Length: 45
Length: 376
Image (cartoon, rainbow over all chains, first blue to last red; front, side, top):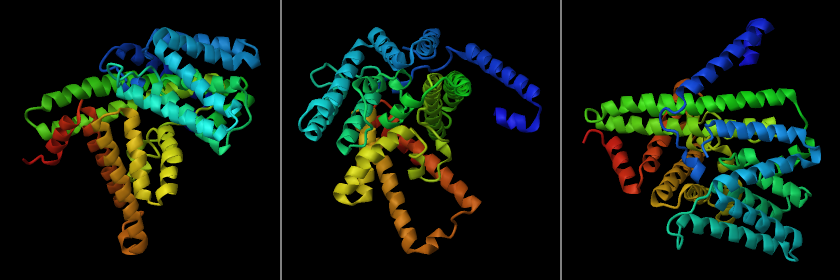
């Protein structure tokens, strides 16, 4: 993803966008953790 | 242990910190000790079984006079124990300790490769650190000893690989929490539930898609975390998924879904069955049966193995027919034919999920019938 961004925009902008993207993901992970089905059957195979 | 937890993240962070602050020769033992502690705390039975398998796989190769016979006996004993625990005969029910299926296959790979003499020269410590390699211990990928041994000697702290590892772990958690748990298991499940009653067949079909997507996002998420964690330690572990729902045929699907398991079955079951019987279709069915039983010793997984084995056998037959009748290849390479083959493969796999998502074979067949005979 970073490589794709670097192909079109300057390094500093790509770096900032990647940091924002990671922060958004972390925020969403924290916000949605605990929702839905969390059991993973491959843990007991 | 729930991998989506602060405890798991802290465990990863502490292991990585201790790993890189230890002297180089001690580093593999740091992950092994961390794995042993994890299993000791959360699944002591698993620690005992893993230690036993490690000794059982190594001792014949190193000390037995007839090492090939000894290794074969060790492989047989590991398989017998696996089947016994899975069947639960005399145990009051199936006994499946944490990571059981994954380290059993690693131990068998080591044993069988030691018979074929394809293992590099190594010490017990190196084998121990392979069997107790924490990133891959719970849900794979089923990494090979040769790759592990290569990385063990070459590894060094690489900031680029470390950064990739962190990113991979983040994507893994995102797949598990945002896509699998929230979008698929929560949002999509509610939508499908609301359709039940009015559109029974469609709801059953969509529920199979939901099940497949949930499994894919969860499993590829766990694999991402394992691969990322290994990268933090300077190891490269084999990929487990490669856009499986874009497969063009069922054989291609199994080269893209749970790749380390299907390649294990190809190397140790398919090739063996092929050398014995010279019948590719029989070898494919045998491989898929083993793959099914590895998941669970039950009728539904046996049926699922036969279903996929039959799919691969039909595909192999079609390929042979195409070689004899070139007219059958008229659409090959055309975008519409490519799209149709992707759709057909996807639906074949989705219908297969109907068998395994239900608690027993009878209910699975009912769901399958509900989807296939939607007009009744």
